[in-house]
Image 1: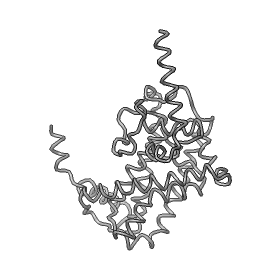
Image 2 (image 1 turned 30 degrees about the vertical axis):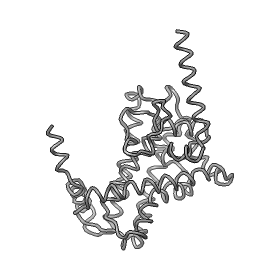
Image 3 (image 1 turned 45 degrees about the vertical axis):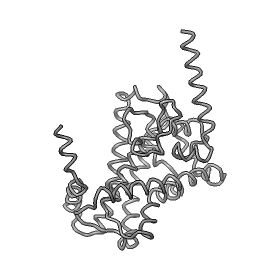
Image 4 (image 1 turned 90 degrees about the vertical axis):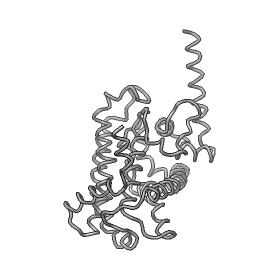
Length: 288
């Protein structure tokens, strides 16, 4: 029970302060450099490094693979990793140049706010991201000119974690970057300044979520449990990874989270597919 005692006495500051101190030791006390390092650092670790681990150990994770022996086209994973490395360096420049706009809205120091503030912002930001991502993603499918750009992402007809950010630069900004940060942008306008630690922990969870949901695996323990709108599995013991995997393998419906697609009626093809699978299994059991 020792870990429960540690958890009880853990505060956001005890988690954030070592990260802040590490970043300061690397880039100094310049707030602009701290902001850039934190934003890019969390993306590097929670997206790029996590994608590498999922790729390197995929044989050991095969029991949780959604479809056995199904892989993207040859060379596509390597291309996506090259694209991700270029994107990371591009994002360094973007965040550095964005600093004048973010400066009045960020509080940067070693003292983090309460868990309550973190939870409020986290769920608010995930809600705004779900709405904006759903409609942006759907438009990239339904408007022919936008779909030409979106086709790059759908080169991954069988998903890998690295596919999460493999997209045309226009889609990356409109469908990924802006929806992800929409909660922060609205927060700045309505509530006021935000502590960098809250943004850091939100991005950490968001990047793990999108990487897992593109991984091609249905893990028994998933970060999607943190969000009620991700719990829809149609009673078939299927996760969000399967939900989004269907979108890539069939290129229809399932534009956002299970809740958003259920709400907008764009999950009907998927529900029919799941029901047919269940019926096939029932028939096989009867034959056995």
